[in-house]
Image (cartoon, rainbow, N blue to C red; front, side, top):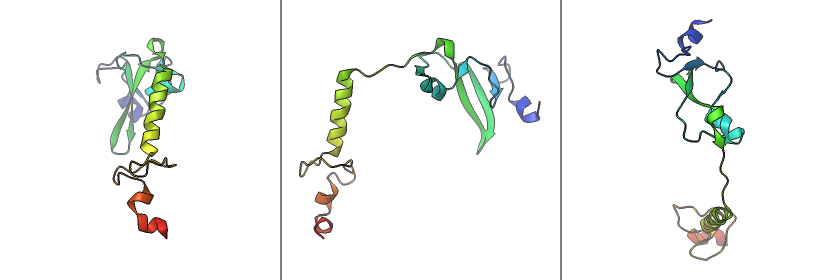
Length: 124
């Protein structure tokens, strides 16, 4: 085992407080948040079970691991929530000045569509 791997290997958590493994050295049964999401799961309120440490840009990097057996299925949005999201996104594309629905989001810095904000450039 290399010195770097040995520095980050603490399976009982004596040195770091929680079980710690090196990059790609975690045992099966643990997953990161992204890995859980890819599998259609979520942590479900469980605490961090372990961590992976590695040397990266700017120093030591960490990824927290959760137990797969305690993970819960991802929740899906209800039809009412989907309608609300659709309405909110439509409101972001509707210009308050000319009331036209644009194919882009209205810039918050301008507060209106590009045609209304710069009428001389739109006419040219």
